[in-house]
Image (cartoon, rainbow, N blue to C red; front, side):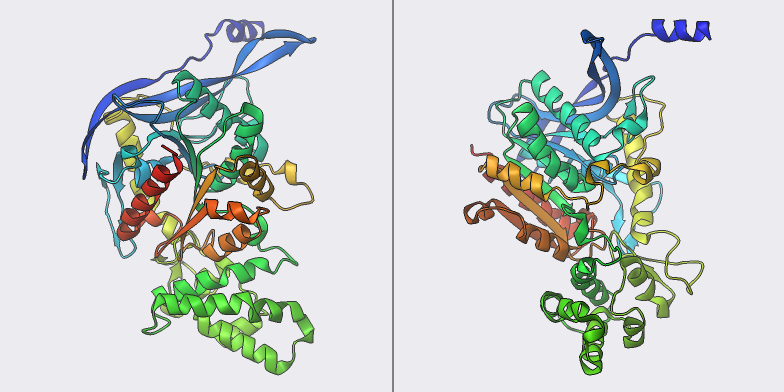
Length: 487
């Protein structure tokens, strides 16, 4: 035991292991020469012993990939800090799917690429308009807790915000970018993190952002958590169910916009009223509500009646195409898959996740070594399910998880903070109508509501898997960054 303790005391502390490489990207406007910096930075904590300062000890090693345009003016050049969600997801999706200078060739619903996959230059990369820093939170990618530190200490709402915020502060300081326009971009749970970070960076570090980019947003979990007594998710998911039914041909030759308008009207008025009535609903009123719900969602009236007009989302994904012996995706309802048992109400796996995981994992593991020249024998954790399952929301005991209060505070404190929100009509994880509901209830004065813009795409959670949506989204976000940079 003594030998082990002596070894721990004398073992070298972790150090940054950043690798720098030079690259060129050709875009519609010409060639961009840029530098990629890849590796892990060491986060440290101030230690006090009996009230006395005892040094800065390592607490975590966080993997990041930064892209900076060569010979650019740091005072005017924007920088965007990006991450995905999970919680427990690495940043590979935004990195190699949308923002980065290289992107994966994954294919799309009905036309998936086959192994071993491939990569191409991303001529629509946000790098043309902003430097980029992709952050993998502790436990994802190559990021790990330091020796003798507990990984679980970072797998929670507040701890996660603090550690990611520290990476942003550290990178900004070391690279002399405090006067650069700054943006934070998150996807899925990453939008929860982003909403919390906007307030955290302001209050804790005095760092005011120019903009937030929220992709497939979840700012208030009450809008999508199917819990007893909470009817809101049944309402907010309905238009997405209708969109997915439309994609799979269950609305005939009707236009998607027409179907969505019909579904939104029902979800805004008659449907929540019918749910609120409970047993007070007459037989005629109930029959009418069941019939309209069934017509919109592509489900049978018998099924809708049997589940009391409350169709939980995974039940929908397994029921919709049961007659075809197929299940549809949660992350993207355009994707379909097969299941070993069509008598149950839960699929084996999400077909959308299955379709994209292999391509992104292969691309990242190749890219980071072969092109970014960063060697690391640790497994790159694309999605850490252990972290996801053990995630702590202790800050919300006896309450639902929400960052709407924090986002509202950040926007009221910094009236120049702009917010771009991107939603996919076929996203069955963070439905667009839920996002609309939450945004409408943000506590903001009327004059600040113009600071929020919303964009919609005919795709799912990772809408950039759909090529027309990827092109449109790249242009939409580029325009947002240019506009919100105030330069």
